[in-house]
Image 1 (cartoon, rainbow, N blue to C red):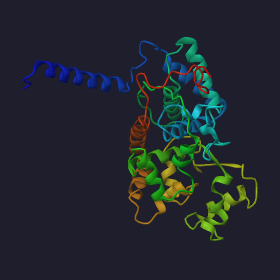
Image 2: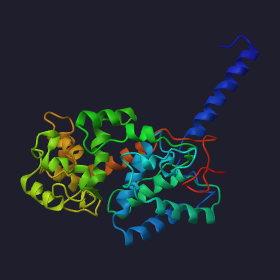
Image 3: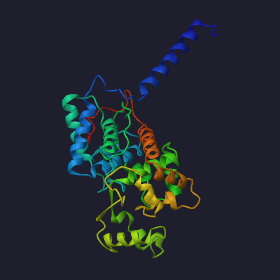
Image 4: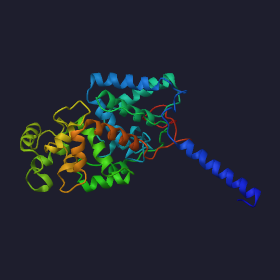
Length: 331
């Protein structure tokens, strides 16, 4: 019990301020309920229209959200173009000539600004576009937490350091996820399941086909028939820009077939196959679980996407609400 009234008041005010900051910093599924009630419909309509003309766009938008969150948090920094003061993350190794969906995000922003000017952040729209992409692709739905603000900066160097590479070993993958506060087993295996849709360029995995780890031989964890198929698509010294599906069975559906592919040694990227072919790995049992149960995968994928969407968010008076996703205000 306080013996000094003024001290008690100061303590009480401090506690209330802390509580206020904590509440202010929390994301909410109803953040735009009054200020932009049609937001969900706008995002869904734009993504659905884009998906109709380009079945790959859903995978691209989920990837865009992932690559954003792994670099200084989910703040839409990946959407910023290069300027005199912005060293764009779009030029990082993992993003250069490969990220897609920027035009879709700009379309969403354009429509949202028409109905709710200066209200919705690009970071929130990116999180929503990823969820809608899952839903349209046949995957799980979830309530997206909202209230993020947009960053004033980008960090290409950090993007080169933080975004997992397709040649990562399991230990490297685990370290990358742990660095972001994600579970290096559960979240890693669940979020890797996003590779059940989308495509990859030959240059990303061609080393597995001919000279794995400088051995002069293919990756021994590749199924022989699958190896032959991939070598036909990606001939040695061929065009590295050729594309092939990440999921050989249902390439345009967000389902659990990705995990069955890993069990059959048909993971396209080394970082995928590492989840199942690393001897004694604790990820193997989860691959088995998700392979056998789409429900289990859907539930954990949704939970892990929500968790990832909370990484390093800006809230309250931090950052800004960009009027154009590719540029900070006033630039």
